[in-house]
Length: 185
Image (cartoon, rainbow, N blue to C red; front, side, top):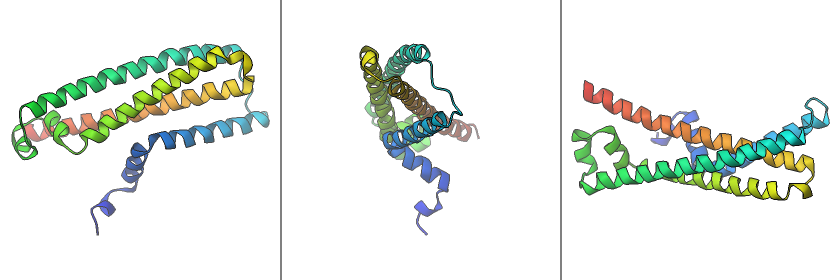
């Protein structure tokens, strides 16, 4: 039995999702928007008020650019810490004995995938910002239903991006907590 087969199924799914977040989020958003359209056509959900959608668009523009800035600042901090660890010429074997959880994280195989996830999230949020800004400018030329779907789809993608990054952050905190427990014993 290989090492990969010993990994629980839910971890395999999460790993697959973290490697392909744009595809997964897009498919998830399309499915939810399609379900919303079906529910609206059947009269189970009312159509959205155009003024509420316009207000939501303005809020999402602010939110997406703020979150993108926050993630870029976080990436800057992560890269700076990584430089600090590598400048001390610590190797992974030595760090297992003498270093903290942060050093182990920066020297592990998980560092670059983590940075990549945060980097992609900032790109997604910047693209959402540009999309929403363009939609706000040309909203008079768009059908209200299409306008609503773009805004709701953007909201879903922002939420999934934030949840993905929060999940990753919690995993890093768990890793550090495990290291603290090991050093306390």
